[in-house]
Image: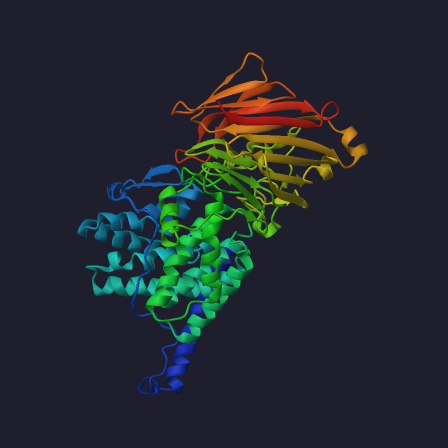
Length: 565
């Protein structure tokens, strides 16, 4: 039985044959059409403009690639003198980055005749070895990323190229864009479908496609943007990492529309204007984004670039109700909290069971955080990072507040979505003499344990963070049948040192700059346990976590405080 990708490969060949037959029929019926300036049926013959690639490049990577060493998704592999596209039994994440050609920007940064020749050789290898029947090479999101990379880096790749390579390069772009036009609507991933429509706009604008074709792909992209970008600028999946990728693709696209004297779709302008303040909501004072719902290590240089392209003096959004996030800030003291329900199943492939978890930073030092998403190809870690236990929030027993689809299933082979979780999340903000207060409640444990979790957090101007975690019994029969143990976890930044006070009710925290903080709990003794922060460039760092343990039949409220020493 043929796979979906193989079926697409055969269908694409049939599609190409049909297109060629239509062209032959057209020229037989209208042999002198070219004399009347007849359109060339959407043919792509040249690249007239290249969007700017805003992502940071590293020229030292070029020497590694020339030597045959490719480092992607936390894995470094040697091609052994062969084409990297001929390697087998390699990690999927590594292959996805290889096939996406985002690494061309590193070769461009080196900018020499040698790196240009190397880039052309690798592009030629892909054209020769990767046919439409190759499932991974022609996956919708990867094809879109490759098209955007080729178009953006085309001035570098084509400089000094002969006419034959130019023709092969442009022909492959035409072939890949035809493939996306044909099969994007079948893509099951909404995020990759949006990326595909953005790539088609890249191609249409950069190759001066017919106005009819440009209007069609612009309309498709606009519809998908309206569907996926919420009113506050968040993505419907609630994943902050997607906002970085989208803004890095949309800003150059807006500039290309302007360069071609074409009015951009209003949906594009709206999305850019909204995403910027939303990115600031997640951003700590050290430049890193808060680790919620699929967010991994922050590309701080790229985020800084994206913010610089917009109004650098704009303020961060604080109340993002549609996306389900809240921000409390007094000067350098920043708290970001997840107050949203689980996204719909189609968008929940990277969602975490971390409702009412929060992160807190004091200036450039992050104190309380979540574990975050690790690099690709660490499937066990990625599954663990999505559990409630990997977040700074309350956990009942060992159960997550959301249920995941089975790992490795046919429908969700790599990223199983959340199937159930918090459906009703309420919150309110208040400002009083004590400071800013946030009260939120979620029902993620109601179905399994008959209990709701309410969290009340207050941030003062001096940076003192006070909190209360309440267990509200919604169904007494169900609650009393369950184990009544629960614990509240606070994952610490890896740079922090923690020492337990003799009373066992207080922990002293020390940062690398010798600043000190005190975490205390009035209700139970505090435990210090090991943790792992997954969202680091090197794949994970050992850390510590503070744990408050209790039984809700004895005490249903846990009160705690974090203040400067």
